[in-house]
Length: 597
Image (cartoon, rainbow, N blue to C red; front, side):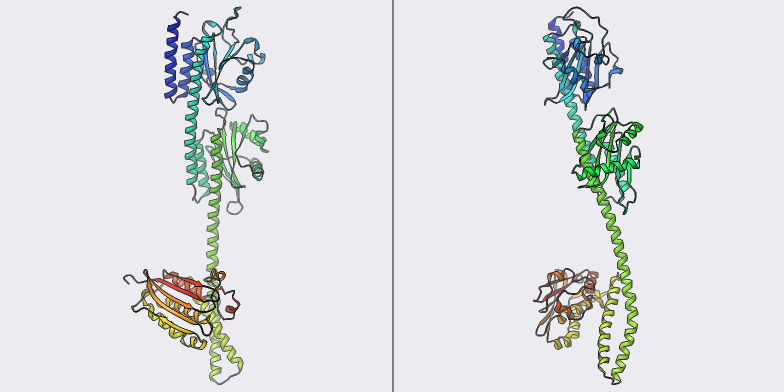
């Protein structure tokens, strides 16, 4: 050596300091690794230094320094990790963290794949042999294997002594730290990208068009992960989607029907076994991830140029609604655990998206069908009621003529009574049909005291005949509302009439009128039959009749309360009920007061 040892050591320390500073501050891994390799060559005197990064089961050359090597030929070179970290390390001498493989231990089949320097073989036992190999596995601070450093042509072409090994180990440690820092940065970057992608998937909730939602999801995932292709497929449901919906980025989805069918069968089988995690597959894997579609996938890989990927079910719980496929080529690493987790979560988010879109479409379809049925029902009721009204009017008129002529057989009275009952039914049907199709009301100022008085007057004879006490507690001041002068009084009449009708002799019906928080309230209470909690659920449904046998003996259409609540709601109000079987009921009509009252 031409330099003194102290000068040499000082130069090494300065270069090591610079390397340490770069490792701590630089985000460019390739630049830092090259600096370390260059430091080993220029600072320690080795002819060649090469640093490889472990990606899955492959060592990828990341940095090379030396005058006698072709950098373009070596950078990016991929070597199965087992060849170095397994076979060669198993026959190596352990020099601390270094691994020395003497030339006489190398298996013949490995010599062909090695870079061999142009160096004469010497008889000196300390001389470096062209086939000698010196490696250093690169570890993180937690002991995780991250890569490998290989050096050749040591100083003076001699096998390194103890001090030279210790100096080399310092650079090895820095290379491990550089890879660890890069790994952490990559992991953080991936987590940020994946988090953003999952956020975008979650924001797709509420989308109406499934095809657009799937396309946006595929684009978000493609932007967040280093992949060559993302494909999302949603299987047909034979209701709204009679064919599969599939999107791909950057290339269209182009799997054959046979491949899709086999993948679907595999995913459904795995789901029934409780396996919902993404499945990895690779062209290097003999059984291609255990998929029955392996031959088709292998053919597609050869055609499109990808080498490995992930497939995860798109679904909810154990229901498989489709699948998500992420593909990579040979230049890309295996999927990291956090990437697999993100793809798994993406499949679940897409499952919820597909389910929600289909549920909303089903709701819209059912709602449209219900509206159409309701419209048809209204038209049917109106048509039949009008057709019945004319002959009923004739029957009632002729019955009245017979009674006026003095014809008094029992049958005439029965005809008159039942015709009147049928007339009330038809009238209620016509009212129900009319109010269901009514959008606007003819509103005028109305004092509800007058409506309550009119109801009392109408029911006075009926209450006396039935032995029911009827009373009105009214407000001292006008209770004015903007209301349809025909429709709203009909509600008060109906509530009061029901109270009297379902209250036995000796009972009491009390009607009260007052104002409460901007609302006019007509409260009708009785001591009648009462209504069970079961019947109250359907009380305001059209054609509903009580399940109480005693109430069923009293004639009724089951339309009065349905009509009344509809009218109340058209006025911006409501009807509420409080009742207990056998103890009576309280019905309260609430409508807004006129402004300023």
